[in-house]
Length: 283
Image (cartoon, rainbow, N blue to C red; front, side, top):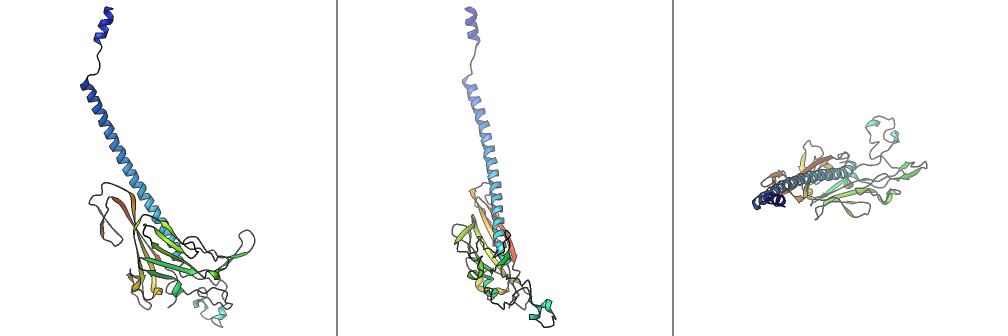
């Protein structure tokens, strides 16, 4: 019994000071871990936002590019009658046997490149168009006549009868919700292509016929002849949805090439220029 009492007296617990020191050390470890976790999350979020915006811009430029590069194109005359242009075939290679070929049977729908190729309005917004026509294809062994052309929304209501939709057109603009939208000729209304767009600018490379001077115009009202526009430059500014730190006082170059504040949001500016291959062929 005496031995038991002696053992009990020798046992000691944790003092209040030791307990407080242990709690303080534990809180410091938790604080450091929390800061590291938040920092890692912030970096991960920034990288994710940057990757998302790059993918958004790439997709938007892909949609715009497919339509702009088609702008002004017409049905090719794959079997031209050279004698129609010159009886003896002289200079036949210089004649327009591929573009704007004659249509003696009146089967092609009307298309005027000077009117339907490109037009723009303030906002900015621009519309591109090209001739809709059908081709003979064999999807599963049976010969059918169908158009393979599509507007910016992947639509073509006149794919079986192009005469009902003689022009495939796509209009690109920015709405009040920060969405880059497109209105096609397929009757599907206006649909968003990407969101998170805080600015978008369009410049037109204009070279008047008979001159060697190229100039960039941003105001569509200054363009008197849309057939003299040889290229379209598009600038997109995308902004992240989540706020990020560490950007206080930092600036970037916006679409107007001016210094602008990040405002604690990741902002990225993308530019792409598209040449209209069919322009300049008709005065």
